[in-house]
Image 1 (cartoon, one colour):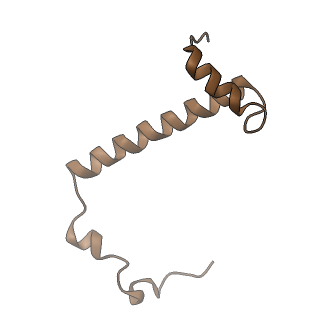
Image 2 (cartoon, one colour):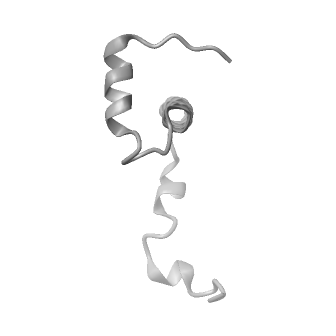
Amino acid sequence: MTLRVPDELLTQLDALVPEVHPSRSEGLRRALELYLYRVACERDAERYAGQPLSEAEIAVGDDVRDWEATPSW
């Protein structure tokens, strides 16, 4: 994989190496992981907005007695 990075971003990345990330590659890999996670979370939020929880689903767990039958592993 080849990636072109603007000088300003590269300067910011280099400021993190080696204190935060052992290498540029690791810093970029971590940034990509976080970006993909964020996109997945945004998609989940859109799905929930399109199909909100019902009142019954929201009510589950509000009362401690709802959880009494749950085993304490």
